[in-house]
Image (cartoon, rainbow, N blue to C red; front, side):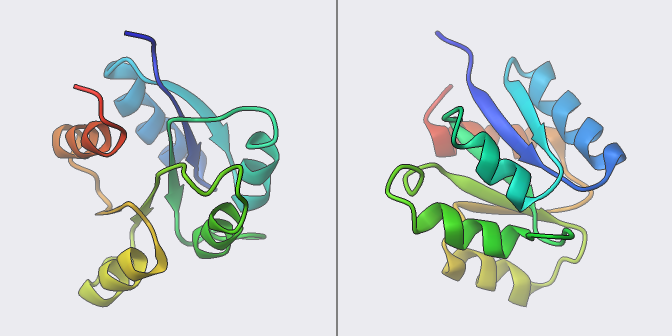
Length: 124
């Protein structure tokens, strides 16, 4: 099976590294972006199997980025999952209603995180 590429959108180096290492350990290639603007620029060059994004970031946050991705016919189909340190039931519900394909609170549980991402993109 061909390797999958995910974009990880995180504004902090530590979180970029943590999420990247989890995914790479499971055979997933990772391209990093530090905010929504950088991710949108990457989407003009590559088509990832999935995007993992923090919700709270400077410049363009995960919420704004999702609106841009969903409103573009070329990117609307790409699954986008949210991760955040500011977990609450309300935020989880708002994220799913906004159109995210998944929602995870930090700290991440690597096993369930990767299993759910693989379900979303349809890989075993």
